Length: 450
Ligand code: NDP
Ligand code: 2IT
Image (tube, rainbow, N blue to C red):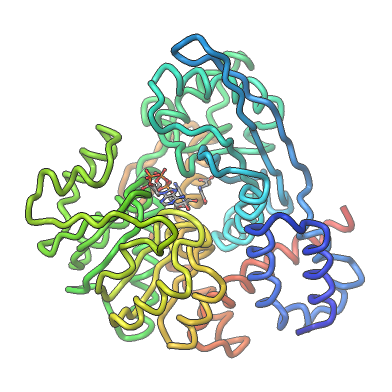
């Protein structure tokens, strides 16, 4: 590897020693962009990589709120405004008890390259809280969102930073946060958040976009390798926003989804998962995946065991779509998938595959659609929502979906072209990192040392 890259990796390790997810994300990118750095010795003189790994700004704040029993609760709030070279900071908010600065920084760092790959004018950012939405009443969710926005509103705006959803943040939470922002600012700034409800300037197809986009990318990747989705068996981890709409689109292409999961375990239905039932359990009742097997008695439920790999990765399938969370597929799970004959992996979640597992898949010639490219349809459609808000016009579902499809086709094309240029074969992981990096690096170079 280039000595310059090695130095930046080592310095980043020393300065952020306890941030393991962040270091993993940085290492994955920096170890793949060597060919671009070699071609541009000026990056070293400009300390471009040192600046790239350091966020432009980190905001951390206290979020006090009162629960239904009248007790005061206190959570941590974060927003990392990572890189604004390509546009206003853009990226989701995650509400999950595991959230810490390392997780928000890894997500914000990845968002820079993902947003660059979309070709749209958006910089990279991410935020969230260690608040746990599970088991909270609607009233508690609203109280929390209002308190979170009371502070966050000082730091965001439609030309500055535009948050959206991620784990634990969907339409309900965005609605409460938008209402609070409007109330405090006393103006209707529709483009300050994306993923809004359709009654207040949200975009059609944003809800579906990440999952649909993942399958559009998968379609392109398979096509380039003389394969398709028809009659393939698919397993999908998670059963949230990304997982549900990936499942919907996979069915539309003639695939059969046989397993889905949540953090407790997975269900296996050899007849094909009944997506309407999943939507009812997850989107309406906010229940657990286990309930599927209570209704469909032919389906099996496998509970995850403490300290063991998620049960879902032991199920035989042609295509695996990790759509839950980071480091969901480790080396053991990767080995099981390969042993069971998997041909392609599509990363709907962010960084769902460990570095060792990625290497194992690539060494075994498994096609891997990397998160920064494959799940970029969500943020791309958020950018389309911002465009519609600026124009004060709404496109139809078909118009947005067609634009999303074109964007995913173009992202795959740029991965393929980059792969040809640097002779990477089907290593789309390196190709996506290089393609995203080149766009950000060019903009950063043009804007000088800031
Ligand atoms: P949701 O909150 O809608 O769903 C998350 C799903 O993942 C749930 O089924 C949840 O199960 C499971 N999950 C979450 N955390 C864990 C964990 N620690 N261990 C095991 N399972 C877990 O989130 P999304 O569908 O929006 O997000 C899923 C992934 O996709 C995340 O990695 C996110 O960053 C990424 N992503 C999301 C985009 C979007 O537009 N929403 C865009 C691009 C990427 P349980 O209910 O048991 O917690
Ligand atoms: O990880 C992601 O790209 C998202 N959670 C979506 C971000 C967005 O701004 O739509």
